[in-house]
Length: 413
Image 1: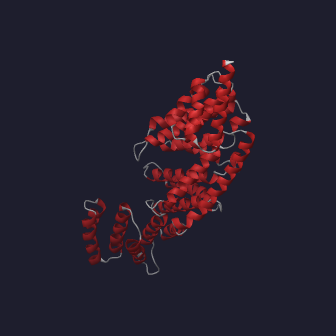
Image 2: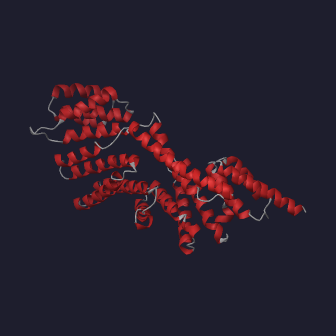
């Protein structure tokens, strides 16, 4: 009788926990499932209780608790039907924990390395046990492993997973624009690194730059990826600037970069499109939640929840007043292109550049770094335009505002 009462109590907690999960009450869900794990270890659904506790802790952002409660299901001797999800949730928690411990240049290399190992174990497990349930974890496993490698500057390893994700096996993925953007950005970084490699040939740099541009163009031309396309246009412009510099600072090269910068949109123009995309995903999630409530299940929500969280993060960033408007960086890039473009009269388009820069100074909310860049390029436009008196005044003003800047010191010499 006591055993029956224990099973009944555990069953009630289990059902409560599922209801909490379906209603996004993650702390309550974690408490219910953790109670089962701790107090009812012989419960018939104990393996699922471990997994659901891990899921609840993860979405409650209690990553250490998630990793701990998932150990049994992620272990090499775990039941095969549970191990895939155990490894997946463990790896997600490890990734998020490493992100939390990283700040600016201080990256939790050890945490991301551990996470890469867990995702690799999971991917190998999926290949050895290719059930429908296990294969459902493959796409996100490849993506998060690529992100973890990116965080610790292992770009070749990151590219390998992204190439897989942008290949024929995932053509219908809702996240395909994100994968292409990440891949294009890595190619851009590698192009920049290659330009600083004394042993690299111009042909090798050009080939890699063109690969970056071709990848970014796939994002730019996707009508359903407006926010990603904005980032892709910015990255493409920066790659085109590198190519222009590589090819002797030709006006034609900078004109191509100028055209790419002009495709960048303001934050205000992107917010409605991002809100619409997020609502589509939420409607889909709600439909699945209703089905789960009717069937008393929890399936089909984890990976969609991760995608919604990413898209919500993009929207939050767009709406955050502290986030620089991408149009400002684009306009700075446009001004820098004009400085290097030769007009019909054979002179640099310094006046066009200065017009853009002065408007930014007067009307835009610039970050300190952007203000420094704008001031320097105003000074440079006078220098390249041969207006020595104005250049001297601009230099004096610059040195007062940005004392000790080596670029200004070199110009004064």
